[in-house]
Image 1 (cartoon, rainbow, N blue to C red):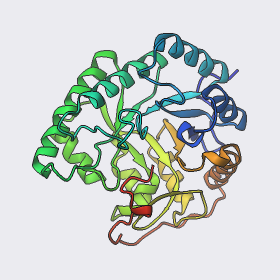
Image 2 (cartoon, helix red, strand yellow):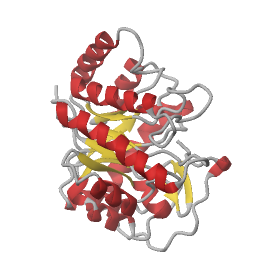
Image 3 (cartoon, rainbow, N blue to C red):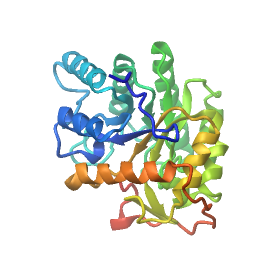
Image 4 (tube, rainbow, N blue to C red):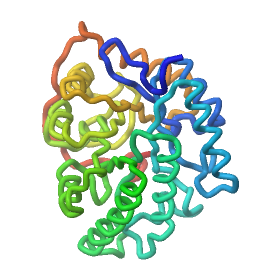
Length: 311
């Protein structure tokens, strides 16, 4: 069997798929389908229906997942974007920006520990949406303090963190990530998670240029299609992104991490969507694929269904 997570496309990229797009599957079944389709890895969202970081018997379950990943030859990144894991009433609450971020910090510490036990390539997290009752200055101070705690935990066990800029959140673009990275003293263990769709949604530069811009800090890639100014994760070929130049840029910078498909609202057809996605990416990564860069400046970002975080 191929060593965990080493399967590559003909173009040398390692494609993965996110378990938040397999919400209706048992975790073991989701991992098996993802591996059987030919993916090199998985982006595992810690959640109540897959690997619950607060469930009894966590150590036993983590050990079982580690064995399953090894059996299937899957690489791994840990994602922390579960919607109602911490509060059954409020999506994503509390974040690091809330008055009491204790449960979020504990969750991220557990994610780091699980990442260490599973040999994750990265543990990804984000800032959260600023509560209306919290001023921007206070929210920023809280974010820096919370991130410092998470970075300390990651450094203690040798885990790499990928901080994701997210449309509508306090850190929503690459410039915001750079400001946070600098405020934390540029820790080596804190890289960037780059969502390709988000680049098309709101970054002022073409998507391939965004990839090149963060090359020195890129530790995790999420990939999906998207339209300018609309934060909605779309199946490949239904948005506006020209993917061959994006994948070429990833090869150009020597990126070796997972390129994980991020389609969190497609669980109703997960195996079919995952199969089509891998076919699309392999074709887009082929040397003969035509390349043309996406250009244009984004208008204000629109959030479908009046939701500031589609995932």
